[in-house]
Image 1 (cartoon, rainbow, N blue to C red):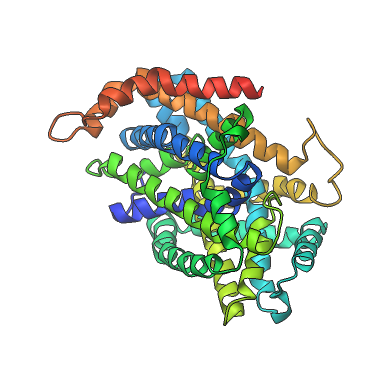
Image 2 (spheres, one colour):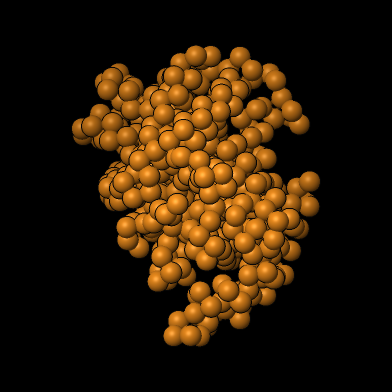
Length: 440
């Protein structure tokens, strides 16, 4: 079976960036940063991204590119059959994430529909919070949007790598970036916005503790789509001539840039409107309609923003489904279409439980967490960091020479490789283990 491939290096970078940006940057980054005190958390997050993040991303892409296989086959290719277990865990992690991620993706579709109603644009935070809380607590309505979002995700994956994933990523990421710039300009001119800027950019190191470091690491993994095989799978579609280090740096730069821009879009408005910065998962969905209510043509901007938020969510969900789909294609030579459909149905079913945990099943908890929070915690705080540990160990010990050759320019490893090798062998696994141990 001929393996799919990207049509261009730009298409690969935008698809990988789309996977990384998604809801991680626009939905999760602002509220997690706000809950953890702003500036100090931002600084730790950036340290994580530009040390652990970029190392693991290069490692994942290289392993995928050299093996030309999905995570299970890639780990087996370098480490033998026992290592394939790590790949199975990564695929299962992607499966779990998409099951609850699709629920949030469905929220974006709901807000597209609500943006058509002029009464939706109001500066009354109580009304907007009530709209959000009532919607997510409903036992049936969010499920329809969850189903629609999952169906659209499957539709893109069914179309394949170039005609589906690459085309969608290329066409709309630029629009998202430009709209964010427009909304930042409005957010920063609101009365009291400067307090939000200071909160976001000024570190308060008295707030730093082990829990914050864990949160920053988990958010870095989630925001960059690391530790679950997304970058490994996308790397497997890359030609041997592509410069992976530059591609990874481009993806990291785009993703962290969008994270910071979104922080400047959301947090100044939070303080301008007197909201609680630790509002939680609904922060973006509550604050942005308030910003739009102060804009000329606010309904148009609201409709466009939530549509592009949906697109950002879709590019991430597509990468997650592709991890699962490519596993069955590579391992069992199954056709893409039935695999994608069956997986979408199974993930939708698990997502039902995640959605109901905001409503009728809110009282059912395990380890003090609802089903949604438990899925989020297990994947972003345990499974993804575990995947990060294992891919760095794989590259540091098993695939070291092959990765060095693949990253070489004119027959020589890059200048930074002498640092990358010990970092993958010792530093990165130890750092992640220490944080995980502290958490457990």
